[in-house]
Image 1 (tube, rainbow, N blue to C red):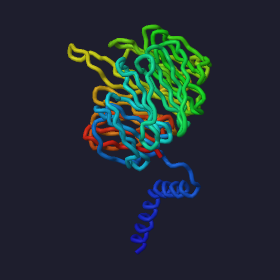
Image 2 (cartoon, rainbow, N blue to C red; image 1 turned 180 degrees about the vertical axis):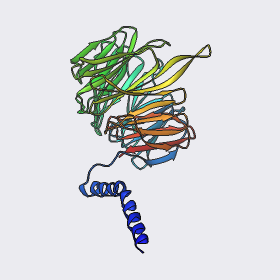
Image 3 (tube, rainbow, N blue to C red; image 1 turned 30 degrees about the vertical axis):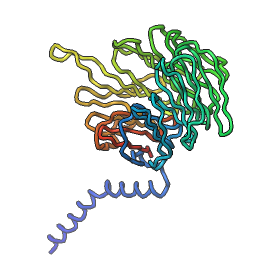
Length: 384
């Protein structure tokens, strides 16, 4: 009897030895819920609907509205729930930028024979049009309703203020041909990346130069401020089909914090809303059986320019979607999957899509991303 009692006690003791890890997890989970500690970020589908193939996919600055432009100039604007807000038809138009109230500016990109901008009100009615001087190279929508800007190949910037009862604009000269344009978070200044007289700059809405950083004349410069406005990521690409380019992190005065020169193809980058991280995507040429092939790579740098990790390769064909408000990354691959990665490069979530990604649209808030898949599904995801 004592023998069996000893076995029973020993078995219970052995059982309890294996319990602390599970119990600790349960306690930690309960504590996590009780204290209201932030949960791990997750990627959630907000809405999905079928649309025709878009030549342009755009998001409003806050991500509330999404618009698609079809090959025939049809423009569809969708709201937060994916329902149609308005539609318009402007033959010859292939680009659109959206305001936070659902208003829009539509135009034809790099088309010297179509230099007209169209202003669409939040109800979808075309309220005004204007011919500008030169082909339209870049456009931007302000986070303040009714604010838009256009940059042309003739080095002009047009700044528009549009309201229900009236509209007005002012025009001023840019240092070079604009490759990118964007408003600051408060809508009180504009940033441009340029070509020819290449560089990046910040300007007041009246055209006064706030900051300017010159670049190399044979490169196309793009610039994007982080949401806080304290840092900017700059990409310099060669104006030809050749490997090479550079990524810069700059402060608000456009002084260099670091620079990375890369002999790669299809260089892209995105800055975290706080400016703490810069994600870089590219294709690196490698020799394989007497031929050169391109492998996809993703790298994450901190504010000091230190590479935190690098991933990719021939079998890991990841592409950069965007950084998230939490500093996490969104990537996608050719196998129709989206990945949420931590700052350390750990995969936190993998989500299968209905088909491979063909287009996507970021917004300054970075809380959502719009993705168009090859099967005609337009999806909006939120990072929560």
